[in-house]
Image (cartoon, rainbow, N blue to C red; front, side):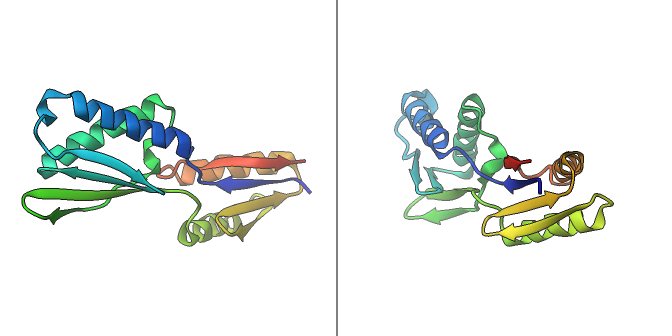
Length: 161
């Protein structure tokens, strides 16, 4: 029976390179000289430190540009709130989305059941496996999922005939 997997996976190597390039640019830019501005990647968290929220916004902008150049969708970033840390510094933790959360997986499953397409969606850990009788039904399901979930950079892999 034909099937495919709906996944939400960022290329973490490209994300790491984008973070490193952002750190280099922060080190060389004139407006960041003498400030505690920094960026660091720990597992799937990107930690930004700066003097103010404005400076964090600038670092985020640089990061998004570097991610775009590395062909990584900026929608993978889940931007956190900025919090004050010692003195006049501010810290922000951005998370790299990896894997479909259960809420989104259930939404995709309900979407598939509500459509007239003859496919079934099964939640498997951090992905949704879609199975159907015909290849055309699966392609229609892909188009439907992409159209309804434009906020997330979903991709499809493991297509089997």
